[in-house]
Amino acid sequence: MSTATADFSLQGTGRRSHHPIFAVFAVLLGPFIVGFHSRMFGIGLVDLRGAFGLSVDESSWINTLSTAPQILVAPCVAWLAATYGVRRVTVVPALIYAGVSLIIPFERSLDVLAVLHIIHGTLLGIFVPATLMIIFRNLPPKWWISAIAVYAFRSAFTLNSGTALLDFYVQHIGWEYLYWQDVMLAPLMAVFAILGAPHERVNQDFVRRADWGGMLLLGCGMAMLFVGVDQGNRLDWLESSFVVSCLVGGGVLLIAFLINESQVEYPWAHVSAVGARNVVLLLLIACLYLLTSQSNGALIPNYLTNIVALRPEQIGATLVIWCCVPLILMTPVAVWALHRIDGRWVLLIGLCCFAIAALLGTGLTSQWSGNDFRTIAVLQGAGHILTFLPIITMTVASGDPKQAAALAAYIQVVRLLGSEVANALMTTFLRKREQVHSFLTGLNVERGSETATSALAALTHKYQAFGQAAAQMRGLTSLTQRVQAQANVLSYIDGFWLTFYAALFGLALLAFVKRPAHGPLTPKDVA
Image (cartoon, rainbow, N blue to C red; front, side, top):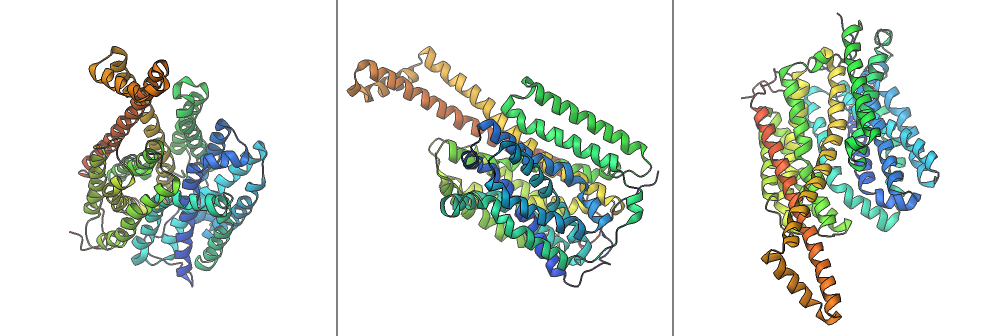
């Protein structure tokens, strides 16, 4: 069976543009647009719900409809860019995206909002894979690791600075700028892509041998799985026939995709692209990284919001200072290290940072506030770049250049679906553990344990001025609230344990990863 695949030009940059620096700017802007919008949209749903006049369920669906289309198109973007050229794939979608971003804040009809967000999410799914293509097809190999570092950096940076930026928009210039910031940035990215990417002819050979069925099956299957996972926690997973239908339907489409790839003459993303041991192990480690990084993306901000009741600007300041600053400082260090030492050592240090941070988080108490997370946040900031960057570089270095487009497709699946699964798993885990701890702690109150009786008596005495009956009612209510708060704290401790074990499992898998062969992403003198 012969295979037509797109080439990332790993053997050299034979099609350089006259202004490759603009390609770097496009690399900077594209992922940052995606990262900031995705983060701010996720945490700004409460503000958007009020602005658009949506119910909780309606806003949840808007969130799903704006995100699921990304995974529908993202896997095939690398192939499209290699076939039709980076300019054709990037420039027009960026301009349409800017136009849609402009009009969304003016719309109030739920149906129209849903359609606009589907279009918005579909276009958003193009930018990250397309910018990776710009790196490999336009920059000299010596700059590849530095450019990939920008791509890896933006994920953690937008994750931790998005809260502060959203608060600035809401408090000072208007929630509309959650969308309108892209009205300015997307056209700028298009200009940079025009200046930085070379003119390329359509690869007619790729077009003739295109596996459109495979692209459609994988995209639709992953999108259905994404919708099922995204709505699963809200609809209680298997208790919802809709969630079950999405998960089963997505699974059936994926099976059909695998059958299609084994039968067509020129498969687009044959599973052999991720058949190498190193690639499989690194993609599994990437999934575990997405889970262990929930200690930073979900546990800290959610704890500070739900338990400590901090305002967004207070949470944003904590994350920017204690996570983003170490991230900025460690990014050039990680690039320097990957040019000189085995990437496995860098990845080892990154996973250890997350493991130590999670272990420190298990000491959580109800008295912790933002400053108590400083050491944890510093370790997480360093851990992000020291983990994500070597995963990407070693995965690409370990793959077959002739199957680069297929590998890129699976990388995008892990990036989008893996992130959603990790987030849904953590959300469900916290909810279930809170219910368990609330039940177990409440049993002591119901059984009248000595500690519970003493606490209830003290609280009742505190409210004696309201009369005996009112004091007992207020005391019981206050005790119930404290039990609920303690159950929440215990669930977050369990969450940190979960991320700790995820980091340990990643370290165990790393022991079986071999050093990639020498190439542009693996220095020759690596020890």
